[in-house]
Image 1 (cartoon, rainbow, N blue to C red):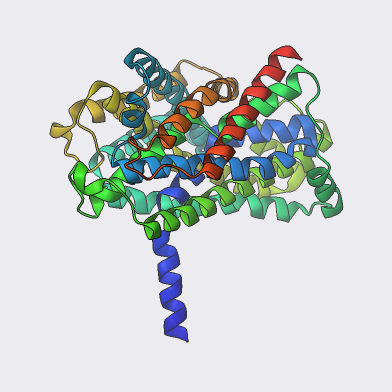
Image 2: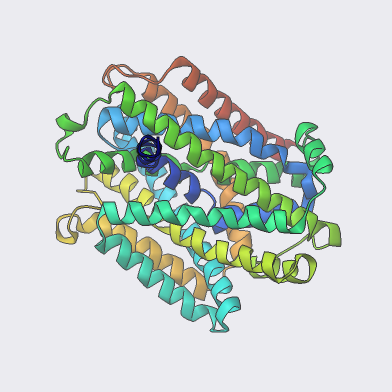
Length: 420
């Protein structure tokens, strides 16, 4: 019985990979900042959003994973068969710009957290984190990076522990979840767009599909012909992987909103300007332990998300312009691909020294993503439904329906923001 249980546990753990990494990377310092602002400004009013975004996020990532698995290529290559090149060039450049801003703000959040823990100035930590992450992403091979990122996902439990440490009134929490309140006013709609934009972010679409290709290469399927197609068992395992990854991502989102709602919002701290202000405000309100967990979580999630941000932009650019790509490639063989990754991180470091407010940058980047994502989702649905593109294995009607609902919901929230 013990051996059988160990084998079952081993099979379960082996099924976890790209879906868990992508889901956890969604809760980067950008997402943490957005969720913290939601809790500080609106209390528990947006807790219900975590229940909404989980199935939507899972459906989107499942579709992106399927594209990568059955075509053997990244998302941009699939979109190239359906859309004009100028549109894809614009989308790739926009993704690079948005991701670079995100990286800069994420580095700032990590550096502020490290300064609070050590007393060493944040500029030192920005440079150190930037150099270490860029070096590791460029020098390490895919298997080492994937395993490291998968274990870093455990840092998300810090936010669950922090919320439980505070001790919420669960009757009020359940009421806030089961009796949702629609946003009121432009600020409320903007917050909903920001939550959707940072939870269902365009960079995750590209990373999920490209990571599937890297998984195939790691199995020895180096040619496009060898990577095409996927068995029902492979697709089933990835659905499980994505479902678990997106579940814990949204659990973390739920408890971040809850933590700041129970502390900052209830004590009138409704306008935090930096992640450091959030952590410092938590200390006297929720105790040093909760503040420490919040701070450690910022560093861990930043280390998880920055390779994803830089990598997804590099993959999109490489597929658009025909560069050789892949984390397992040597630098000399994929110079442009790795240069794009390194440049994104370097520009992110530069943004920190330019004194760009990270919370403002992250918040508005999330809104931009929320507006742009419906366009990319429409293209994804069209490509995933095409039998020729998908090698005779198109996404299911249910999957396409849920992703369509996701696109409509994100578009509706964006329209609501501008109208109200």
